[in-house]
Image (cartoon, rainbow, N blue to C red):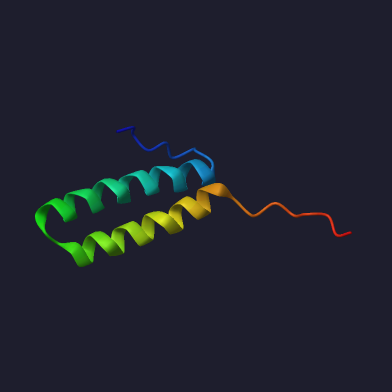
Length: 61
């Protein structure tokens, strides 16, 4: 796993957090903590959305 770069962009930071949360969720699932694993995966999903940035605006016709 990469080391977190304090000077990274917000998107890169969110992507790093997403990866950490995914790994923690996998560990929790292996240990039998299904509720915690689910919560961590939901947090990872939110981090993924944040790393994607704002949605593209489509021009109105």
